[in-house]
Image 1 (tube, rainbow over the protein chains, first blue to last red):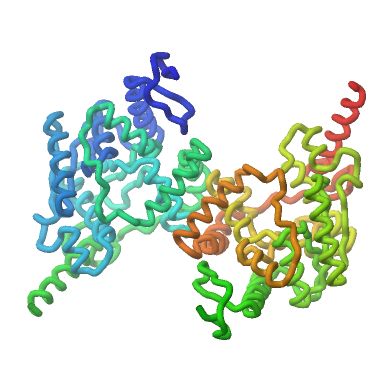
Image 2 (cartoon, rainbow over the protein chains, first blue to last red):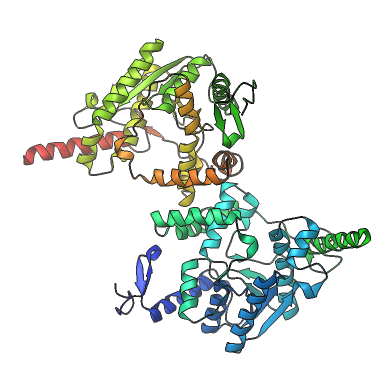
Length: 308
Length: 308
C-alpha cells in the first residue's frame, strides 16, 4: 500500500479514514488534524498561553508535542495523584519529556497539598469510588493552576475514543444535562475559570499511540489501576466492535452529535454564581465541591485518630 | 429459584427485570406488561377495533394472542411478500393460528396486487435493496387495509430489541427527523390514516419468544432471508453485549429516551398535505411513494419486455 500523500511505502493504515501514510506524512496528517480542530472550534490562537494537562500517557504527551510543534505557547501541568508506583512512573515520564525538550512544567502533588488527599487515602476516608474524588481534585487543581499562572486556556488529551465512550454512556442513560455540556470547547462561566479545550477530540487512541511511537515519546503504557472494570471500558469495547464492522463510525457518532443534536440539548447552562468561602474558586453553593471533599477527609481522619 | 409472584418453582428467569416466574405467572406478567404499555401510552381502548399486522413470526403472533386474551376487538392482517418458501411458510402459520382460534384474518399478497410487485422481482427491477421496496409496500398495504376495513388503530409486533436497535442506529448517525418520530404511538396526520402503535415496545425478543412457546403458538422461526448481514443485526449484537454486561440497559435506553430526550427532537412533524393522484392515499407530493415505486417497476418491466 502506498502513502496517500507522497506515494512512498505506507506504514500506517487508517481504516476509519480509508487511507494510509508513510511515517513523516502520518505525523503531518496528525498535526494538521489537531490544528484544524483547534481552528474550526476556535479553541485558542497563538496569542494565548495554553496550560496542557499531562498525565504521562500517550494522549496528553502527544498533544503537548503537537502544540509545541505547531508553535503554540504552552506550559505543562502534572497533577500527582499519589497512586503508588503508577503515579511515580507517570511523574518520571512527564518530567523526562519536559526536560528533554526544555519545556516549562508545573508539578502539583495531592500528597503535598494536604494529609489524606492522595487518591487511595481519599477514597478510603470517604468510602467512595477513587474516580469520584479524582474528578473533583483534577477539576480544582487544574482550575487553580490556570488561575495562578494566568492561563486563559486549559487543554486536556481526551481523544476520540474517550469522547465517543462518554457520549455513548450519556446517550444510553439520556443524561440531558451532560449531553448539554459535551463539547470540545467549554466557555468559562466565571472570570476565574479558563476555557477548557480538547484538541484531540477527533483523533483516535490508535492515532495518538502511533504518533507518540513515531515521535519517540516515552509514555506510561499502564492504565490507571483504578480503571479496571470501569463502565467506560464496556462502552469502549462496544464502540471498537462497531468501528470494526463500520470503519469511521466513532468519528461520525461524535461529529454528527456536535453538528445535529448537541444544540438541541444545550439549554442555558447553570452558572456558578458565587465563590467558595474556603478557597475562593467559583462555586455553585457557599463551599465548592473540592473543599467539601477535603473537609470530609479531614473529619474522617480526625475521627479515626480519636478512635485509635 | 422461586416464582416472584406465587413462590412455585420458577422456570423463566428475567435478568433484565431481576426476577423469575413460573409458567402461568410469566404469561400473566407478559400480558399485564403489554396492557400497561397500551394504557400508559394511550394506544387504544376496548371500544376501538385494532388491525394487527401479523408476519407469522413470534412477536406479531404473541401480540395478537395477547390482545385477544386481554379482550380487545382485533382482526389480523397478513401481507404476503412473495419471498419464496419463506413467505409460503409464513402464510401457513398465520392462517393456521387464526383458524385454530377462530379469529378474522385479512390476507393481501403482493403477487396478486400486480405483476412484478413480489419483493424479489421489485428489488430486481428497481435495482435497490429488497428492504427498501418492502418498507414502502408494507406502509401502503397496511394503511390501505386499515382504511378499507374502517380500523382506527394499526398494531405491529416491534419489540424492545427492535426499538433499541432502531434507536441506536438513529443515534449513531444522529438522524434528528427519525428521532423525532421514534415513538410507540404515531398519531395520524391525515384523516385516511390509522393510529400506529407498538404495544410490545417494552417487551424483549426473549420474552415474546418465551410467551409464544408457553402459549403453544406455532410460528416461523427463520428470519427473512434478506435480513442476513443487515446493519440492524450489528446493532442488535452490540445491544445484546451491553445487556449482558448491564442487565436492563436496553429498556433504560429506550424508556429514558422517550421520557428525557424524545420531546427535544419532536419538532412539528411534516404533514402529508395532499392525496396521491393515483391511489388516493395520503401523500407528500402529487404521487405517493408506493405509486412511484409501482410506476418504476412497470416501466422497467415493459423495457425488459421490449428488449427481449
